Image 1: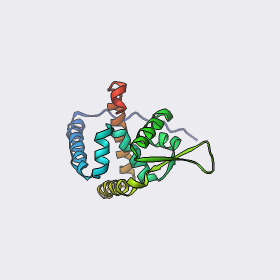
Image 2 (image 1 turned 120 degrees about the horizontal axis):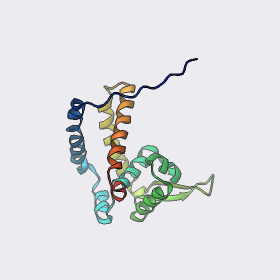
Image 3 (image 1 turned 180 degrees about the vertical axis):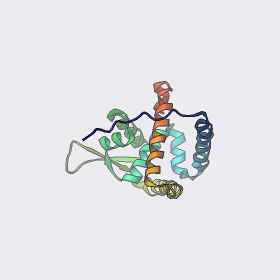
Image 4 (image 1 turned 120 degrees about the vertical axis):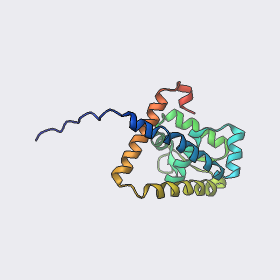
Length: 169
């Protein structure tokens, strides 16, 4: 059986860049406009404790995926185990997440949204997810996969140009 060889992707054209570059600030602006939807109590905690986007990413993961181990969060967020543990600790001190011992494996710590904030966070994330779902519905599964792959490449490329301390915020 002959092996398929992958051919390199064609170079990105100036026209493609000209189409993409204005979309990135528009996407950021649209997401920022939606920041008013963050529940007031969470927004207050956010500002009071100096939380960053990486903290919201963890809350979103828990809202969509339910309780999970620190290792699972590390994999989902694509950060090291120490970083995931640090973020969980920071959110725990603020009272947005709770940690408990895994009843089936006492070496594992399970992280969940704090009961006092679960409904507000889940509702906020649900509204955001519904907007994205509606926007993605017209795309084929292959187009959606391509979009995710492209967004990951853009984030990775942008992160690689930042000093390490800035990339983690």
